[in-house]
Length: 458
Image (tube, rainbow, N blue to C red):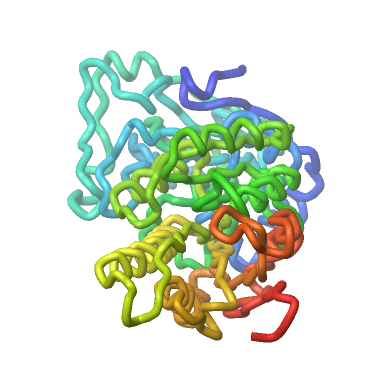
């Protein structure tokens, strides 16, 4: 019996690679009696959920940027009663309204720990009910607005006619959308049925604290550590249409990361994307015309990146201008104010949105300047702008560590760019250090540090 995930709302059953692991797992369950959120303390559960067949099936059908936020074991035996018709999206995203456009962002993996059949109890699903159904309305109200009784649905006859029963053999698993209507049937004999349900969602979803603490949420598939590679990660580089930003984007693409660059000049941005395309052999390069100092444009950018890729892992805060020069007695004060305001706003807005959208943590890297630490005669607007980056880096590294976000600063030194045509090094010389910072381990890596490529102290 095979199903289609998009059309039916479920797919499978498939068989696990390592069925012997289930025996160890069941034995462990009997000893601990722990049937809820066992992934917090039980490595066998993590091994089951990361089975090669499960991870490959999820990768093929759901893609990436996922987190595991709950794993429950269920014991069903005679007299344990049926669980009424419901869909798990009632319980997810907390205060947010149910959004059927969001169906691909929540799903469950159901693993049969012993045979699930007519005698031991099995699952029933209403095919296609993960999408709106003609002639049947579901409440879209958020979780807290419903009583428990309202989570269990009385189904009309035309929906009941679409229900199917899914018998499963020990060691098989199903993947299903959390929006699909389903119920768990009680056994009709003395045989017990054990099953494991793992809840996964996109890493940007708002999981209510009552359902999962931040420490109970794990990136999926489970990496041995979070910083060994950039392949498949999603990285934003503001001001990436030229100079240092464009070179950083090139280096990240060579590491097979998906890269989004921003710029205010649309033609320059398009030229940069076309130039960088040659390095995007197994990843994507996208250019977005956006002003990093414009809150509305940057909010739209971050939302679009999340929608397209499911999340964001690394942000390079690079966009800045350096066009106001002159001593304090002759500089145009209004132009000075505008440049400082725009540069600082660009850094803060990008950082703020990164903190919001890096739900599972990530690396936030400021492109600083030695002039922000030492000052520069007749260039105070740019000096003050870059000095603010030093303060932001120190402040945010303390503030965001609890969210597993590392905040560091890269000082490139004297680089030849449109803003500094007399620089003594190529922008490509920045790539290596930028890549190292992008790969920082979220638990043990550098945080709050300033790393400089300037050839002399400042």
